[in-house]
Image (cartoon, rainbow, N blue to C red; front, side, top):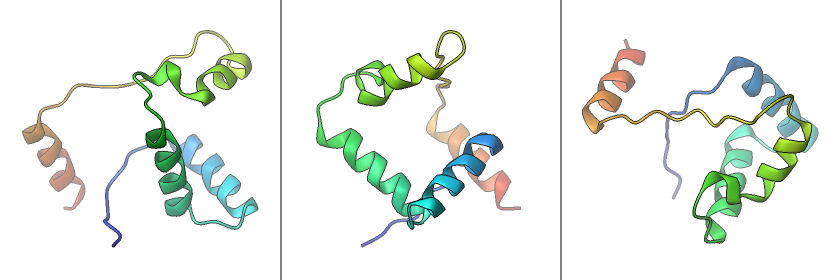
Amino acid sequence: MDAKITLSFNDEVIARAKKFADANNISLSRLTEFLYAKMTQERYKQLEDLPVADWVSMVAEGQVEYQTKARSRQSSKKEYFKTKK
């Protein structure tokens, strides 16, 4: 059974991901699912442990910075419902 989720990404990242998915004849949803499946098959303890981390470091200009933000469940719900108006 498929479940729907809402994700927020940088517009430029989305455009590149859509192009990549199209070139590989896969939907963006299935590409995202594939990547999550690959990440969770192994026992990665942090983002830097992911195999892609070394590749990103090699091609990035400058230090790689993962953008995360701690949010409460309530603030996440508010943000979600705000986008539905």
